[in-house]
Image (cartoon, rainbow, N blue to C red; front, side, top):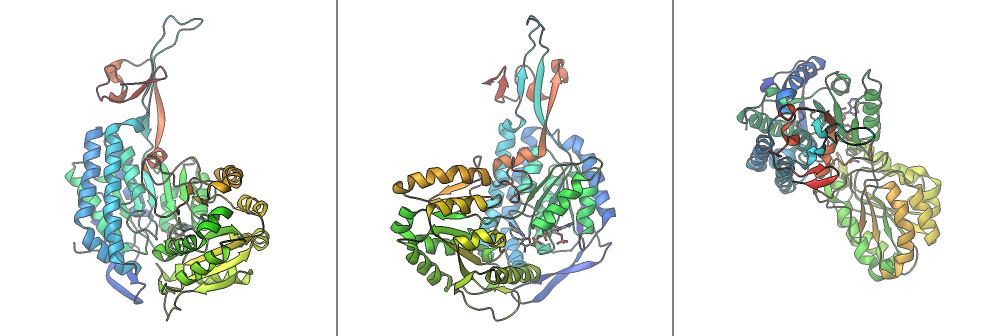
Length: 524
Ligand code: NAP
């Protein structure tokens, strides 16, 4: 595919109206061809008018038709995986093999959402038949199904240029729900964004759908994102990135004349608790595992196990030594953008200025935007006294916390803000502490991992990638897994309707063969 650098709106390519940019190769420090177009509020407006026009027909597509569309995107994603991986590698400094895997897994996510659409359970059809003889008042026929919210604005993430970006899980789940998508591409990987955007655009055309179903916009600075969030035709927003950016957009959306839901996924340190018996039994293994998982994607992962807490005792020295040995094996590697690298350097230094001791490190960076692997340590008292030590350092830094007692472990667990995940390493003899810790963790996180690490994550029906603030802005939802579709639907009740005017999912005779809740019982 020859990259043109254009914006993708209404099935066509739109040239720059607000200047251009080039992609940056963080491994070499060089800019890469071609020029990529920037647009502004006028392009956002055009994309959203078309998305709004597309809503009526797209949200009413048959389940099979919509599933086939998602499968077509999956096929196309797999077909371009080598080219996409090569370009993404250039734009991120991360290995191409990693992105081939990411493209295949993301194609799998589109296929899983196709299955979700075919099953139709996301419609949550419920029928409470009329009870004309009910006393003291008769009941009218009530039928409920979920409908798509409307056009959705999706902010592509910087750190997973395929799975959380243009053709990522947010787009898959919004399209599965029946929502047209206007995608704000992240400027860290414009070429990858174009490849992904063009295959979706092709799939829209080949499926005979309204061209407003998908658009890709890009702009300099905040103006384009603000225009998206402010636009009256946008009905929901998803965002993955910093807490400052996510909250700015969230607050903005709440100040609209018609506030809309904004699902932001922002920050998490995914605390890992190692209880005494597990520590004594396999401290070294846990220390090595922590560094291996923590360095994935140069530590630029929302699920990085950034903070490990353990009570000093048998096994702690082994865990620390193994982690120091492992971290020394990691070379400094390019970070996603110079801005992310600068923030990493600043925040890793902030931890050390606030008392964290440097236990070990990987190879020092020669120059440029390379991030050095670091292993730091603080005591429980320090962690409790200094809130910033409980905050994310986005990049390859890990923090060990040496606690003085099981009571301090519980106190430290209570001190964390909301998290995407928390991990428990425990053996049978740790049961009492584990039972005390679990309710503390449940209040603060969306996923609790037992005797494993928070990475890798499965994308399945039982996945939660969410959690209390500031992990996300709405802990009731997940942004990964099949449940992600629920961000984009809302209930509508049809009361006292004639059968022929009802949506297919709610008709007598169940023409779609769905599982439905009939008078409170599942039936088909
Ligand atoms: P970001 O700065 O929050 O930006 C994410 C996206 O939102 C970009 O497209 C950005 O547009 C846009 N945006 C941000 N603030 C905005 C505002 N006030 N108004 C309008 N648009 C806005 O995140 P990033 O660029 O990915 O990385 C920066 C930092 O975010 C990292 O150093 C890291 O700390 C954090 N981060 C965390 C995670 C995680 O999973 N925990 C993931 C990614 C990033 P522009 O680029 O055009 O400004």
